[in-house]
Image (cartoon, rainbow, N blue to C red; front, side):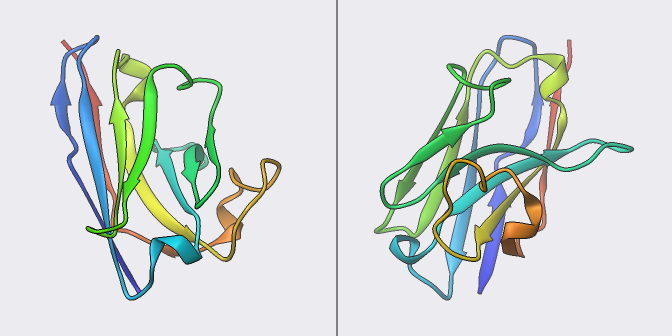
Length: 124
């Protein structure tokens, strides 16, 4: 099982980025994928989650971020619009241990495989 996150970079406030999480060694239909972010000194925070039938978002990103997946490419995307300086963080994608429900998706311990992270910096 491998997860490769990419697409981070420097963007001005109000700008957009699309993160990609390329998965290998399993099929996206069989597991949920979450996006998390972390800044130094803070706990890892759940951003969004997708599985075969559900999409969840943190309140702080709802209506600005959109999660999607392409089964043919075995890749999950996180489209981030209207970015704010407080969105600055290292973003990680992770594979859940199983399909998660709403009360479970934001807990990092429910994920068994993690990508290496991609840095998003929102600054003018």
